[in-house]
Amino acid sequence: MRRFVVVLTVWAMSFAWVLGGLSPVTASAAAGGSSAYSFGYNFSGQLGDSTTTNRSAPVPVGSETSWASVAAGNLHTVAVRTDGSLWAWGYNALGQLGDGTTTNRSTPVRVGTDTNWTSVAVGNYHTVGVKTDGTLWAWGYNASGQLGDGSTGSALTPIQVGSAKTWASASAGDVHTVAVRTDGTLWAWGSNSSGQLGDGTTTTRLTPTPVGTAKTWAAASAGRAYTLAVSTDGTLWAWGSNSYGQLGDGSTTSRSTPVQVGNGTGWTSVAAGDFHTVGIKAGGTLWAWGSNSCGQLGDGSTTSRSTPVQVGNGTDWTSAAVGYFHTAAVRTDGTLWAWGSNSYGQLGDGSTINRSTPIQVGTDTGWTSVAAGNLHTVALRS
Image (cartoon, rainbow, N blue to C red; front, side, top):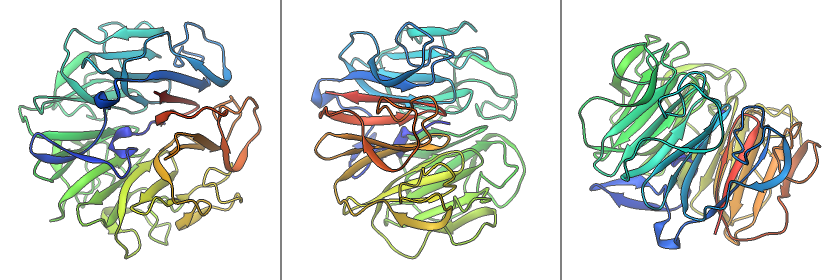
């Protein structure tokens, strides 16, 4: 799936005051923008290289060098440029590219004409984005109300979620969405079959509903049918589906309200995937838990974990993203690493061999962020 995040979600140890509130950094205008590279599955053009050919090593997404942030979903990719414009490519049968059509795109196509986008998040078949004025927008598939506009009708172009202008960040799951406001409150909507909205029920919500807790939230990440969120006190919380231990609470019991992951603090970011999760702590350590059938936890095994296990002994991880059965992450030296399933080359190491420990993607440095789709990966390099 996505992710992540993204969002928020995948940007670690770096927060900025946005619209008066604490929000994960999702753009790097100060760095002057980056080039985008992608690899893995490309059936719908989600790599953006003008083909539908799978790639087992990074290929450039055009020649543009002003990308600020990127998010990857099931079969599509969306990115923001440093000028605030929004672009998308890949699968579009449900309008998830937001260009007003249902035509697949193998190269980036612009979403509208606005130049005030600050961040974007991608789910399986829907997309959400935040603008500089604090408004939240959504488009694509909406059968479970994941667009948050009170309906279940899909949208081919961005539609505003309510009238609030206090949104700081958002994350798109399979068929649900979560978002943080500048006051630190957390909201969720869409499918709630496994309690992934965190409101104590399994009732689907068509508009944003507060997550039932008094915590103040810094960031949240939506997975397939579960959610993880970091509180401003550095604690980590989870709820929703837990069949593979992806909530990290030591059980495989689903939760409809937030449960703490361990009892420690110091968490700075988290990324929720389909069935596994990764998180980074303030000291730069990387942790993973949940399904591990393809080595996606990076601990050298294929054993699933219901509590966080450290990925190696490094203390220099800055951001991480999770796909269907693979993980990718960036280190402080600008190197890019990946592990887990590699059947379509989504690890970018030139092979289709699964890896149960991190392997470096090429020898380049300068990587600034990474996003993982279901079976493809997209990364930015300065």
